[in-house]
Image (cartoon, rainbow, N blue to C red; front, side, top):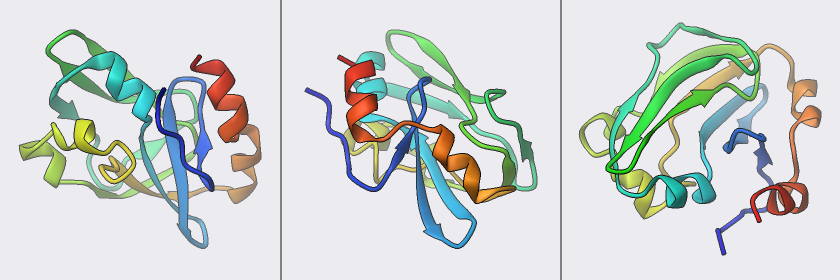
Length: 126
């Protein structure tokens, strides 16, 4: 069973969103996604200042088994990239919810209501 956390928003493409303050959120991949990928060996993330568009590709995660594109669950602007993952991508496997990918300034906080809660995401990832 994959680990899910309360207070997060989940996308159907297996990314999570956590509000940190105001319109600022963290984005990462879910525990389910990392478990399906296997050992993560590389992450390709956008640069700070990149404009994210909901449902558009913004990067990729590569594992020993497969490569998977990352899709933005929200519209916003990248204000920070988790540089620790560039040198140590396996941190995603250690704890997918601590190993966030991007810090993003949302265009509209209301957009989070279009994402899934814990219960609905659990049904999707069964």
